Amino acid sequence: MSDPTRVAIACQGGGSHTAFTAGVLKGLFKNWPDEYELVGISGTSGGAFNALAAWYGLVTEGEARAVELVDAVWDDLAADGTDRFTNDWVVGLSRLESMGVPLPQVSPYQNPGSELGKQAIRETLERHIDFEEIPDHCGHERPELVVGTVDINGGEFETFTNERVDVDAVLASAAVPNLFEAVEINGHYHWDGLFSQNPPIDDLLTVDADRKPEELWVIQINPQERDGKPTSLAEIADRRNELSGNISLNQELRTIERVNDWIDEGHLPESDFTKTTIKRVEMSETYHCSTKVDRSRSFLSTLMERGEERAPEFLE
Image 1: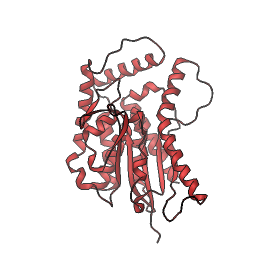
Image 2: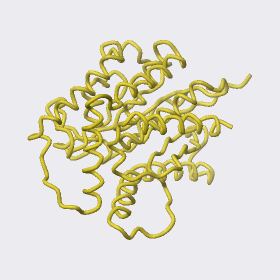
Image 3: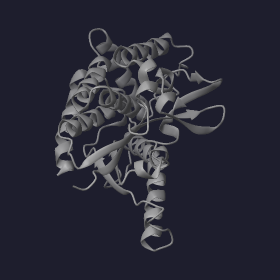
Image 4: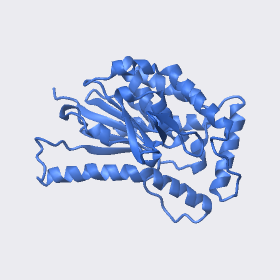
């Protein structure tokens, strides 16, 4: 029997839209094929929540626990009770802003709701993940875990891998600058990784040869292609948001494709270099960019269901 194909999964960020990614991961781990071995998983922003929950479930109890944890994290993130009114208000403001309506701007450092929101996310993550245990579950035979952020002071992206992943790293990965305060890590402040590697890919590939993925599965939130020409302010804001989320991803994927071409052309020996096949799981449905802050339970459930439906189609 041949060795299983080594696979890494990269989860693109995109706010609430990454509930789709949660559904895809649930569908994959419910039907994980024996011919594949997961050797790494990465994520940025909401994608980091998914990558962390799936990884922690896998290394502690296996695929079934990964499904449960991904589900539990999003169940806690959904807006309930009085939080629903705040959620609707934030979504409405985001839509108006994308349409060019002038609105008063408030820094997250002057908005007490910013700190409350960050604290709620921290409590959700710590409720389901024992961060002190993470180093004990890292090792050569375990999948790589990678979380992407931006180092504001250093002016460059910074990834946190394996035992370096703590709750602050994950919070930093989701710290959207106009919504949340920057997160201090090792004397430097960090923001949402959407500015840089979205999602992180290089760290999944720069590993020992026997752990390098032969396939990279990218769960892509922002549509790669769109028909027509955006003309209204809302359409322009939508497409601009999508393009900015794809720039870093496409740059990294082009690097992989270039290495694959060099191997095919004989410029790099196959004995020393491994080709990595890229496959994408795309969220074909399109939504207004304002819904990336929509945490209503109905919207999240819809996205998660669509992601879970897409997983077996992808595996086939």
